[in-house]
Each structure stands twice: as C-alpha cells, then as structure tokens.
Length: 302
Length: 302
View (cartoon, one colour):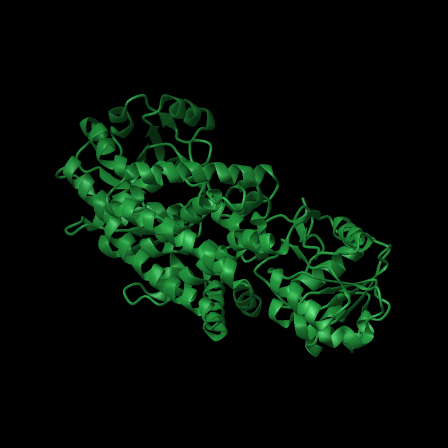
C-alpha cells in the first residue's frame, strides 16, 4: 500500500506543517486541502501549504489514499461527516488530535466501516492558523499512532511510513494509555499554565502591569503555553476529562505536600525534590526532546 | 558618589554575569571577587569573571565602593559576616537575592550601621555555577531595588546608576511588596514546575521514559525551570514563606475552579480563561520581556 495522495482537512498550524513538510522533503506525494474558513483557504493557497486548496471537503478527499483531519478534537465528528460524500473505499482516515479515545469514537460514529487509524504527533507551538505552520515541526518528534482493534496492518504500515517520512519517530500505543500519558506530559501542564496566568492577572494587591514587567522570573514561560489556541484546548479538556482529572488529583496532592513543607520550614523536603527534578531535565535534553542551550536558546540583550 | 570599585561575593550565574557585564560594557570600574568554594574561585579566575579573584573575603571587599552579595538568600548573613572585617566605612552593601524582606533583616543583623540597599535583578537561566554567567544577562531586564527607610539618597543613586550601566531598567519598591510580586511572577511558577515534574516522575501507570519521550507536548518547558539551582530555590521558599503561601492559596482556588469546570463539562468557562490569558502573552512580548519568536525561538528539526 503506497500513499501518493494525501488530503489535509483543516489548514492551521498542524495541517499546514504537514503540507509544508511533504513539499520540503520532496516526497512523491500529492497534497490537497480544505478548511471550513474561506479566509484560511485563501491564505493557505497563498502560502502553498498544499498542492491544491479545494473549495469543498468532498473534492479535497476524492482519490486520497490518506485523509488527515487537523481540526480541534471537538470538531472531528463534523469534519468526518463533511468529507464522507467524497471518500473512496479503502481511504485511510487519520487525525492529529491530542486526545485519542474520544476521537476514535467520534470518527467511528461518523464514518462506519471506514479504515480509521487515529494518530497524534507530539509537536506544536503556541501559535495557530494558516501562517503558523513550518516544514520542520515534526522532525525528531514522536508521533503516537493508536490503531483500533482489527486495524489493517498494511494501512498501519503506510501511515507509520508517512510520519517517518516527515521526520517523526513513530510509536504505537493503546488509545486509553495515550490519553493518560498525554494528560501528564501535555494536558496538565497546559491547565496549570492557563490557571497561573489567570490567577496572576486577577490579583488586587499586585497589578497586571507588575506581573508583566517582572515576568522574566519564570512567569513568562507559562504565558507562552497559556497563549495556545483556546478552542483546541477547551476541546482537549472536555474530551479527556477522566485522565485529566485523575492526573490533576495527583498533582494537587503533591502540591499540598510542598505547601506543608514550606509552612513547616522543611528545607530538606524541598531540596530533595528540587534535586530529583534536575535529573529529569538532563534526560529530556539527552533524548533530543528539548534545546540544550540555556533558557531554550532565548536571545538575551536584544 | 561614584562607584569605581565593585566587589562580588559569590561567583555563580549572577555574580559572574555582573563581572562579565562590567567588562563587556567597558565601564570604568575595577572588579574583585570571592567565592567560598576554592574550585569556583579557580574557575572564575580562568574565565576572568572579575578583575581579581581574592583568596579571602575581607581582601575582596577592601576599598570597594559597592559590595554585591550573590549567594543563596539563606547564606546572606554568613556572607555578610565573612566580609565584615574588611569593610571600609561608607561601602554600599547590596545583593541579588530573590526575596527581600528576609535578606534586609539578615544583612542589618550581620552588619549593624552599614549602608545596606538590597536589590533583585529579575534575570537568570536554569544554569548555575561559575560557567553559567554571561555579559548580556541583565540587558533589558528589570532590577528592583528596595531601599530601607532612611537610605542615603546618594548611595541609592549610585546603585541605580550601576544597574542602569549594566543595561537594566531600575524600579524602586517596598521590600514587602517586592516579595508579594515575585511570589506570583517567579516563586509560585518555580514551585509548580518543580511539583509537576516530581509528580510525573513518580507515576506508576506512566513510565518515566514515556514522560521524557512525549515531553514536547508542554512538559519539557516545566523541566527547564525545575532544573534551577536547588539550594537557591529552597532558600527562596523558606525566606518568603508568607507571600508564597498566600499566592499558592489563590492559585489552588483557581485550579479547583478549573477542575470543576472540566468535571461539569463547562466549555465556556475554559474558553473564557484560555482567551483571556492569550492577551497577557501579547503584553509580555510587547514590553520586551520575552522572545517574540514562536516556541521561544527553539530550534526545530535539528
């Protein structure tokens, strides 16, 4: 099974980056695309995010070997229904959503009998929209594929090969386990960042102007994550409620323990945690999952 | 009052960066330095962090117009007592500690009658030690000075001028208010980052290897902050207990509200917060407090 035509539904950061990566890597793949927003379609055509921007979803997916839905997870069902009239039999349907059990269910409901293989490239930035994509977004990043029971092995191989060709490393995982892992490595970090930025901007005894001026003490890092797309993230929390609440419970238990250590001036407990976490950072860098330069390579003194 | 001789006590990230900034900017200032660790003194001399690395603290501060204590806030009292035998009358004593009320008290106790003007440059990276410093660390960053009651205006002007000459913007603030502001913009963000990294590495149903592999979903940002110096941060939490606990209480209230919104599938509450926080990011960038490039300018695809 060879993938020679890929249709991208949703031409924002992820969809645009897939199209640009196919082009930049010179893959023998034709790309088509559609977005429900006419302005996004126009901008996508200008930037050449895909070979052909179609005006109708059914036209974009006609003759595609692989369709990738790059829309917020809450919009997957609608997107699937929109493309249904144009789908040829045997077309692989995949996606890039950050939660996988809910998406698998939504797609199976919308496209009964279709070859559905959900996936999640663990990559992104805080930006969104048709101007945000770039060709190297997936290079060196993991793409988690969550094949459902009874998935066609040839289709799975083809999808894995596609992501590998974009520079990603592929891992197969059960959808439920994916949702638990990503709750820790992505969803809770986003929830915490959104919350502390909200807390800081609501204070009465510290002004918003002070919060912004002195943000280089650590807070500014959180503002980057808290600038991520609101619709995408609303949908992530609603669609991965169980795992998020479970992991949030563990985090707040640990935070309460830290609170108690501070209140009781237990310096050893603080020092022990702060030493342990340093080792995790080293491993993240050793495994190529972050920039090794201090401060993420931020420019100082410009 | 002109500052022509500066003594730097503690030659890590902050102390080293001050020395390098004085040199790089070609200021007409002679620098001396001391660190209680002989290996750090040797490395500081190799890198030329200060003009002269002294073997004894009292020698480093002799004839200095300004002494800057660049040690963990819990070590300020000891450092002040160590330099006391060499201090000339009229020398300004300042510091770079992240909490200010506790430091002001510790310095006043250790050096009764001295001209003490605590300060806090809001700048740093996750690295520490004599190899971590660089000349542009303070450029464009704020330095908060917390002059005590009865502070000599000429000495305050001289200290402000020194930080301005290093490229910083100077703000004066009451020490107690400083501690509240920094609890929000720096101390709580660090506590949260340390805690979530600890939580993630302690899970049973998600392995540490998975946490590291999929850290690009947001978690890796927190690992950078959680790699900060353990002794420095232990001391910050112990010395700014009141403000940290106060702000932590507000954060956990807000986090509980988000938890409730997720549990009850209140998408509007999530969307409202996520939209509001995006505006804060824009202001942080507009005011030059962060790199405007997506993802902090991290390198993708290397």
